[in-house]
Length: 460
Image (cartoon, rainbow, N blue to C red):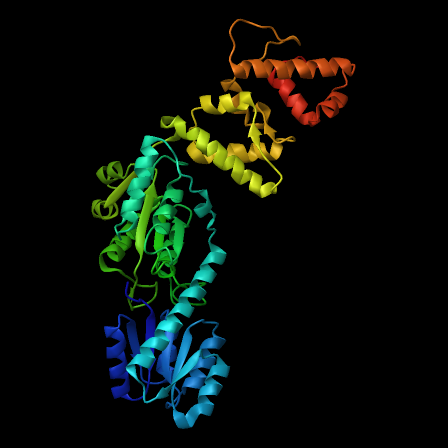
């Protein structure tokens, strides 16, 4: 992957600028030029340059003053200064003003390219640290290999497409784990050393979408008081995950198509294009083909995105994955509480989970178990710890305070009956004092009440 750093060459000698611009362009850099400090400052405030390769001694505004002005504006553009050996003191002064390093003239091609490569790594690391502070990357911890034939097929698809640079469109109902699989593609790819930048296209106000995607220059609009790098630039050399791509308005669809075709972006308010090397993974729970027929989604963009399609089936169509997901999420929840905590499922809770139809898919399962992990007081998640809707998916214990045997019963039914009978016996031994009974049983009073309520035991 060629570099897409944006470099500004600043020197008052045209011959030196011409040589440097040609050399850097052939090396794969995006390069612009300025003939002195004032012209350079104008360029820098209008465009998001990553690096400035600047001479120190220049008319009107020298390189040291240029560094000071840029730093005063709060811009994080890096400076690599050029100076003659006899001007070493001024080079040190430039570094004190905020320059990263300096090169001594006459310049050697190998030295320039090596130093730019080193500085490029520093810039990318700074961008990554900045982005990591803004973007939660926890979804990478959620990938869980599943055993159903459909999910094993998807795992094979991910491993194959990850090693290419093809655009991928992930489809499936809400909550099926599209973002997790997008991250798995990135992690298995040659871009894994770069950033994975997720963005929900439906969560950004429409008036800010273009700025978020492509960035803006200072003064591009009211409130644009400094240069902003867009998501495409942040994801350079990595992967940009466009979640809920079906929510993208049509005028942005046109601009996204341009990026996919030309591999360059233009910040809002700028006249300059910038090359980007980004792999696109998109996802949607909508039927994009139907949207194309309705005229709400561009057909040409759909074909560009749908180079490789991965469809994730809903959880209700692969119940064999439930067991694995249960273990995964219970283990994940236990880690939040500490090493000594172990969560397990009571028989009636597990059977209700297995019988439920899961309209919210994997996300609903994770949320239900996280809630239950907070509510349970003994580490054993019962039916009462789950959301109320699950009560309909487990047989009721007969009312009246006793449990009767009625023919052949499942293991779950037997355990449920025994549990209810024990609770009632302890309450009787305590003379109806449920608080004392809960203490003897080693459970919380609220847990006892929930279990009795689910068993239809009349209130005393």
